[in-house]
Image (cartoon, rainbow, N blue to C red; front, side, top):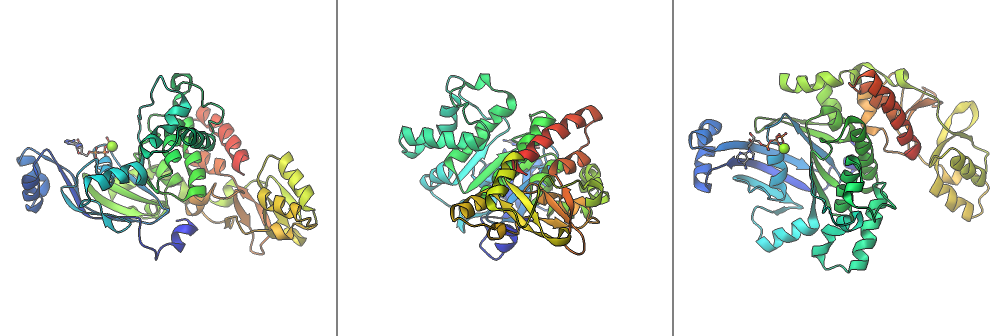
Length: 422
Ligand SMILES: Nc1ncnc2c1ncn2[C@@H]1O[C@H](COP(=O)(O)OP(=O)(O)OP(=O)(O)O)[C@@H](O)[C@H]1O
Ligand SMILES: [Mg+2]
């Protein structure tokens, strides 16, 4: 779980589901009758319906990345689509910021869908004859914003997903992964407090998919947007999720942070997913450690530090003192403001924005922290000396189940990703 999430734990949850059930294919009264039966699944089937979700409970914290995982047909989309009532719940409550949205007026519901809850699908429809920029601006159209501002916000969102400068292209001129970025930009342009994502990366090939996961993690570190993300894939769930809700046959079988699910799968169904990521419990930081890309001495000037960051194409670096003891991390923006103030020492720019681990820590315990800071996960010894780092790329390739040839290119693209945000 991220620190923000822990800090917010006492706050009111963003989304609460209580006793949510969905019976497909039956009218309200028949559905209620089926749900009241001894065996609701059988009763729903006997009446010619289908029990898609049954008595689902969850609380999603503000800013949480909440993953819903399970096999095909387990009810993931059913649950997701109840959150914006694309799917009317047959029973139960759904609170968003305390408001039961199963009870709200149509007008309020429209407002929520337009401003409050964004959605990204596996196959979302880009308009083929409109430019990428117009496609990204689409969600703003219903909101009475001037065309000028719509396009500016679309451009800003395209920048954030790495498509800056491609606004004038048409969708068919982009690759599948880039088109998916446009879909993401469309949601980001609206900037909704809640984002629902239904297997947004499932149609992408594995390498592009990883890039998209990295991008999402990066955006999430900046925005801390309450997000519900549906996936089949536990590796994906682990990489991006704060917590994972595992579903089977319309029910929740486990709801926990990814590492806990890997360590203590609730049943054989969950273990089946987990068998892919057992390495996370076996490999430790010491197995994956490598030298930090940039380590600066504490007596360097802010100006020189900035120059070194630039030369190394990184936005943050470690600063060590005597005996390699880690003093902290400097970031480019803090250095810039120090330089502006004419400071001669980097001490004023030192921060604790790094995640520290020991060499013996297993990667399952810290993989969810990878990529959340400007420097990779940081390995210190007992005395606080900097031993090295575990880049996210190293974690991902250690956990990946793809074959060797694919692995090589995974490393390359991760290396690039690491430079981009390390
Ligand atoms: N509109 C519908 N009418 C009848 N049955 C439906 C409807 N939508 C979904 N179902 C059934 O409900 C069950 C759960 O469906 P759901 O789409 O939530 O599964 P899922 O976990 O999202 O699966 P997938 O991974 O394939 O997307 C499935 O058996 C599905 O066939
Ligand atoms: Mg689905």
